[in-house]
Image (cartoon, rainbow, N blue to C red; front, side):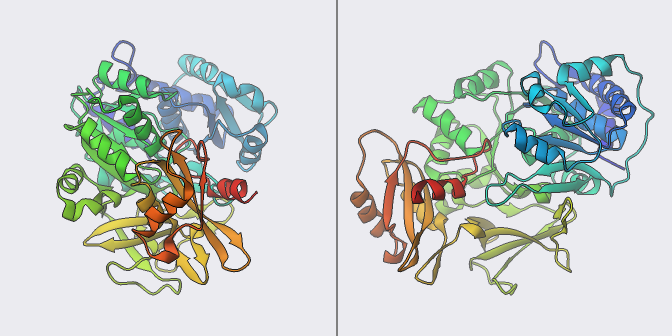
Length: 492
């Protein structure tokens, strides 16, 4: 039993309901199923062992996802923003790939594989092909290959098997729970676990997917309003741009019942302004990793509103909520000893949706099935707080300092739009603390004033040794800070 059953189930219940696209020109679940079956025949005909997708989010992604599943091969969506050489390196790790690429990226891929098709050509071939012979993929075979973002090391190919993805769906999504008029706006890229998770979870729920290939704040708001979007998923940088664009005005999206965010740390001031701009929308913070088949922690709508209204629990807005059903979590020290509630250490997780397996590198799970996320974290009163990557820890004078502890304070400063705290090599202290700030305006507090403000709210050892102002921070398309680039830039 593989992920193809998700589409089979949806078609059996509501074949004529719109699955993908705008009201005026959408694709029904039956049409999506037919296209996937014919697409599987195309892939089988080329003898593919993998199908690689290089392109922006759009209706071709769910077609390719289920076509690959029905053909019994994995789909590997790649970051279309990568340089040609990087794309070639990643594709070179995959056996017998057939590449499907948007026309804008087609020329970068000549000679990389025996078969390179544009998205339009693939859909044309699928339209004229006969359906593939129906088959059931074994649940222990690989369904999706996703390469990690490579923000702290070289990208690794994560193997997500059918059983991992199905476990995530069965434990966190209710089948057929969406109403006929429900629609979700997908603006996360296909090479991110949230982009692939959106395909599976929305088809399983029976919800129409509307794609936004190129994000702009006004474009996002226009589609939300025009298409009656009831749910959306954004990364923090997107929400920050929407809030900045509104500039205090209401969001004016009466049908937007749910707005999920994740993929990177959310600055609390941005979240508070967003909650005010969309007062009738339920906010959801979804925390997960590629290796865990998407979400493992959720801060739900009620928690958001309760924390916003009550200063005593306001800090919960900076948490990622509670662990989802079917998952377990532990906080361990560097010697693998389990820590008590409230203590900060490294987050380990276990559950049927966890892969933890890398292409050519084997499994990262320990003997009892626990996966090391490499995220610093603590659990208080059942709520999980993420403190950043273990690799980001600053060691100053022998003391371990989590950048997030300082960032959470600095982002409250009125002149700070964005901030990243990094460690810079130092002969005396080992590392010194540097706060890199994107200011809100051209005229802003100077470095000494920021340091004084920070010292009043943190221990002296947490006060930045240096403050640097920049126009922007280096981030991936999904909003993750690329600290190694920032360290190189500032140290240089």
